[in-house]
Image (cartoon, rainbow, N blue to C red; front, side, top):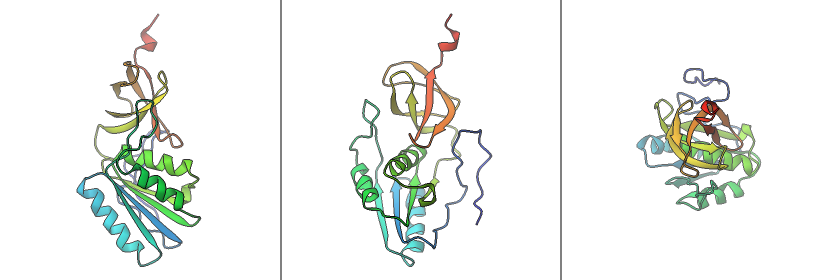
Length: 190
C-alpha cells in the first residue's frame, strides 16, 4: 500500500506521511512507542494498538520525551530508559511504530537503528510535520554535540553548547537522528 507524503522535501530531509501508516499484518510482534503529551500522539497510538493487538503480541511504551545532555548524548530522561529497555527486548519480526513530535521521533528512530533495527521494521508518524518551526535534534559541527533546538531546516539557532549562531542545513542523518548545523557567519569571515 502506498502512503501519501507531504510536499516533496529537499534531498536529505525526512519524508513524513500525511496519515499514520497502517499496521503491518506480517509482523511477529509490535512495539508501539508514543512520545509526548499531544492528544494526537495518544490518538495515533491507540489506533495502532487496536489494530495490532488482534494480530500479534503488542507492547505499548508511553514516554514524556527523549532528552539530550550537555554533551549531546541522550540522557536518562523520563521515558528514555523504558524505550531503550523495550528496544533491547525486541526481536526479528518486530514492527517498531513511533509517534510524537519530530525531535522525539527522529531521536527514537536513531536509538532503534543503533540497536540493530532495520528500515523494514520501523514505522513512524510525526504530529508536527506541517509546523514551520519545531523542536529538532541539531548536530553542531563545532562543539560536536546534538541539542534540541526550536528551528527548521534552512533556519538558524544559537547553539546551547558553544554559543555560535548556527545555520541548520537541509541535511538529516538517519543514523544520528539529527540535522547538521554549522556557524552561520563562517562564510562571511575573511
